[in-house]
Image 1 (cartoon, helix red, strand yellow):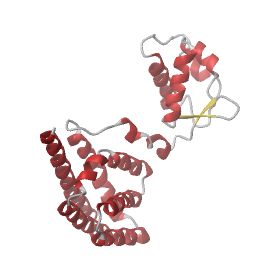
Image 2 (cartoon, one colour):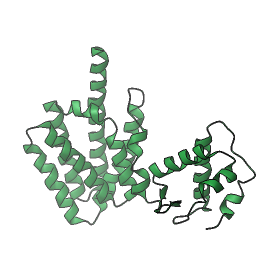
Image 3 (tube, helix red, strand yellow):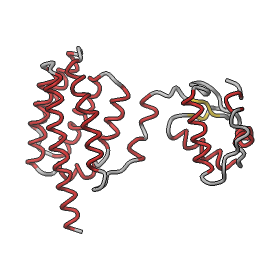
Image 4 (cartoon, helix red, strand yellow):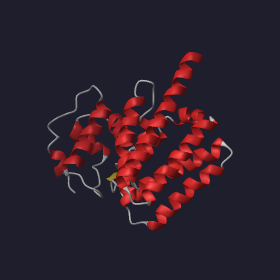
Length: 244
């Protein structure tokens, strides 16, 4: 990779407002277009200053943000390089940038419906008999838990196993990020014995459909489960509003 990728932007200095953010988006644009690819070393900070027409601080801020996002990484001896851009690296910070609220809870569960129901369907179509057996065993083991902490740990593992069975790393990471949203709210919901029993029952039905290799039933059972989770989460929000 040469400086050719940056020659197109040399004559377009970044405007002063939101300098670091604009530099960040310029670099992301070069990656999306294919001008920058995995393994390419970025120009020096001094060269980037000249290319984008900004001072050193916004360059460093943009590079720092790209590093956090997993798009570039600092190399020993100086300089930055475009990473392998794999799904785990890029989607790991998802839950840091989103938060759940009364206003967006519906959107969040809508996304979970779109992604997790598809994951359940694909898991049912999977030929991974060992993975399916582990899922079934995990679902069954939840019936004996006497405390909410054990259930929460198993619940996380249950949803992760389904995503892995689906065989798509990007889908798995997206599901994981969405699952992590609102954990504090669901932590309170899991203290309710009836809510936990209902979730365990629904987990069993999902696992049975997946192990039976029935994608349509697996999607439906996951849909039912997510509707229940959304309902209990909404109830916690309502209780908090009354208390405040």
